[in-house]
Length: 135
Image (cartoon, rainbow, N blue to C red; front, side):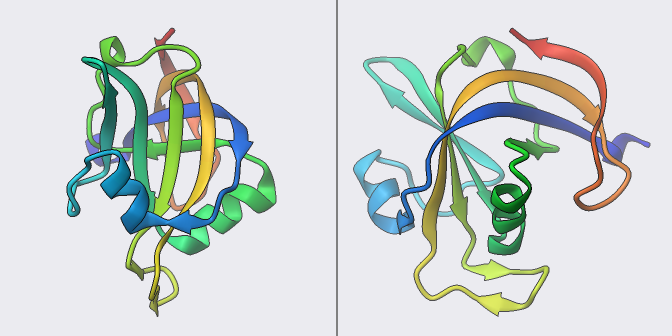
């Protein structure tokens, strides 16, 4: 089924800063309200990719030490490079728990390793890798 196809990035954990989402986005010139992900650009080159997610899922990523994140929105492999920063920031509302997050945070900073096209059957299920897209 097409809706089960995800672009999943795998990364090494660098830091868990827990800094303000708002100040992080402002610092990097990123407008609020982007869908799924956005790029950080420095000197005409992409230096990072920012994903948004529910607090409970980011917590689970940290607890399980499974440093991967996915989106159904296509990510172009040519915009990526090994070692580029991967950022995970919280949404204002965690739809899994219903919690309203008063001050969403930048929770995870990682270093990109690879990206795969994956099939995922349901929430937080292990991904079935279909094809390596990067590097």
